[in-house]
Amino acid sequence: MGTKDKKTVGLSQVSDRELMSYVREGNLGAFNELAERYKVRLYNFIYRVLPEREEAEDILQETFLRAYRERNRFDQRFCFSTWIYTIALNLARSEYRRRKRWKMVRLGTSRNEGELELPDPKNHQESFMPFIEKAIETLPPEYREAFILRDINRLPYEEIAQILSVPVGTVKSRINRARLLMRQRLEPLKESIYELSKGLPESIGIS
Amino acid sequence: MNCRKVYRNLSAYHDKLLSGEKARQLERHLRECPECMQKWREFSEIVKAAGYLEVQKPSSNFNQRLLEKVTSLTLSGHEGYEYSDSKRWPTYALVLAGMAVAFVVFLTFPHLKKGESHSLAQAPNQTPTLYDELELDGRTFTYQVSEGNDSSWRLFESDNADDFGTFNPEIFRREAKIYRRYVLPVVDIEAGNSYAEQSYLLTPVASAGMQSTDVVF
Image (cartoon, rainbow over all chains, first blue to last red; front, side, top):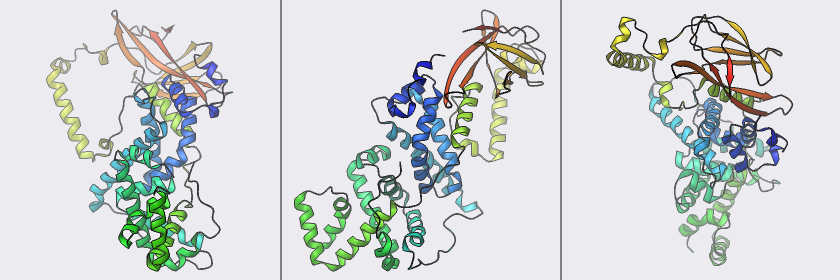
């Protein structure tokens, strides 16, 4: 088998870019390693950016399938992370645009429905989190995307700008606007906010 | 720096993107303006908390299902298939589209209605529902041709009954013979997650039966 030599190298030690060059040769082991590296962070991004969470895993699978099908179009000079996030974003966007089109006739519950209980003052961290989730859901899509990429996935501004195909300045203003909207929407619970992250170190995001 | 300007720069300040001088001006304002200070505290707490939202995980067999899907796409030769909204079209739209395609085909290939077999799709055939053995790369495989449909094969590895699924080999014509070609995934069990692919050419299949399995690499 042509790829035998590469198997002796632990794939976990290999860079994304190098793995992609193996994938281009048809090495599914390398593809599996990339899926392993990116599935959780992409899933969290898709899961929160979509209005309907049950679709998230399908979109995640489609993201990787598309990456595989278009493996020869991947430009080795670019960052794999940016490329795969862009694929996920485009698929998620077409999904929520499609949802929007059909919203009028769609029956069943969406995750935006249902009441939340007020945060328990004894357990702020746990009981406050659903409010944060809900506030993210209510952000307009372009702010929601920027907020998730920055504050949940912890990507640098430059990479977010490439993923969203907008200038860095636009990313900065979208992130600022999104955070201000979050604060505004959570303002009624401000007493809880101060208790929220007591004792938590700075998050380093999902990896 | 006034309140509005502070508001505009809160993210930049939070992410340490402001110049030293601008950051000092903003801090000075925060010390003097309790309202902005309160907003800043809420703002930074929310940003921090967002980083602690529960990490969501896809199903534990996600990779396995993904690889099966990639393998079946590769085997069926449908790698070029593009995801699109069309797969979610309402049924009536698909029916209408199908009728339109059928009409165009009818116009383009009028001989089809006379039952003449000039097209590749109508070429050869063999006996369906046939199990046969095939040796490739030192390994023996069993393949089964689906009944009544010679374009679909199911492939097993004979020794361990590993099922490679159903796939459609590419059928093409060369020098007046009809060939089948398919890409077989070779799974390296020991390496666990390492795969390789090998393209096999079977020739020719125009004759009756599936015995003709000369492998050309």
